[in-house]
Amino acid sequence: MAPRASFPDVLPQELRDEIYAHLLHAESVRSAPPLYRQPAQDRSRAPIYRFHPQILGVNKQIRAEALKVLERNRFIVVSHQWPGLEDDMHFGSVSIVTEQQTQVARFKRHVMRIHLQCPVSSENKSKTKHQAHEIRSFLMVATDLPAFCQKMQWKFYRIPAPCAYITFVGNGKADRRHDAWPCVPTKHVVTTKIQLRSPNQHEHKLEAVKALIGPFNSMICASQKATFSGFDQHQAAIDVQRLQLRMGPRMVSTNAMAWHMLDTVQRLLRRAEDLAISCEDYEGACRQYQVIWVDALAYPLFKLSLETYDSELALPLALVACALLDAAANWGFLQLRLGGIFRVILAEVWGSVDTINKFLQSTPVQVHTLVAYSLEKGITNLGACHFLAVAAFITEVGENSGFSTPSQLRFERLHRAAPHCGHIQHDLEMVERIAGDPKVSTFTALSNPEHN
Image (cartoon, rainbow, N blue to C red; front, side):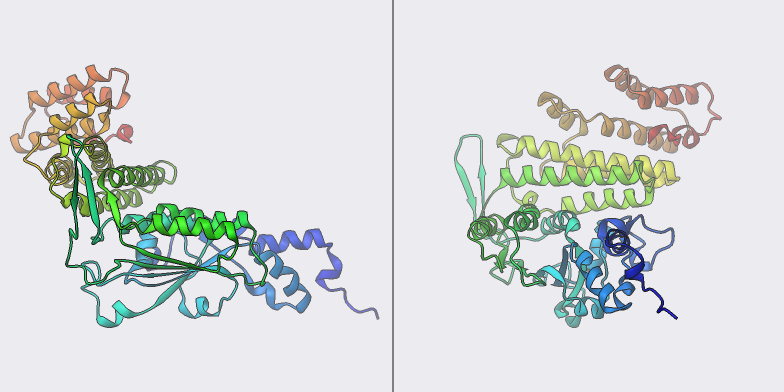
């Protein structure tokens, strides 16, 4: 009797490669998150990876063939002494292959290792001594490195840095502020070590190396100590030297920092809008808006005493403030749709009080002042103005237990400013309807999905 044919003998090589790719290639095993997730992952809408490494244990021939497909993926190991970093990654919708410490330790086919170390700060003072010094690791795919770097950049905004800040004021003179936060106990605030390695002991192509280090251009922290190893190619070494200087500047222009922060805020806003519109994950979008808002106000740049409207910071700060007003407005509209009527009023406080008074660090500035300055510079912030009108209307109706004429006038002015905006037209009609019939529920009228 003839021996039974094995799997490699039955199927041609092309079909076997397709099967291996379906089981082991990141693009094929990447899928939307399930309805029910582990508690640590409940806060994330990031896609998950369902690799099937069991096929590697069938026999030696299949293992050798499947490993070639598995190695097409570019895995990265991130080790850190940063309490709660994995939770922040899940919260920021960054995909993680695994954070099981034994699995990460056994995996040896990564092309890069990143080690992050954060000093004892307000973020981890509440942690125990063991947690603060514990080294943990997680595994990710290189395609998620840009999202990881953006999330780390947002975390860096909250860390004070002992470097010189230069502000160019209206008369053209440079104002230097050294050691703005001398309480930081270390010379370098953040230590980042990036090691390139090849599991096959082959040299990386220059294009692949540049693609790997490219996302780190957005991972900037004043006084960060960034070190690279394994980049032996001449051109790659030159790029790495430039990247080291960019990632950890010792002298920072506040104007450049403000524009950089604006770019980051806008990317996070687009991510939150995608969660709300494409994924219909309103809770996840609300959390994203909340993270944007809370972290932005802790940005050390805006704790400096600056004559905002007399310097080059005026335009980027106004743009960032308008972006934060958008975040507060979108959060409020989503809460209105979810039924959180009291959170709508909280969002109004975020937008009209905190953003203006705290963010700009000046005497109380009314919303119309920022809007007037924005319009003068060609900035439109219609969504925030619309939300503030809705929130003010809800507040006035709740306090006065009746209809308020000033609220109707606000919507009429908004409608004249944007006659083709269907959202504003809808709300104006609802306000007029409430004015004509007091029995109509304010919440029912304004919580219509038209807002979203």
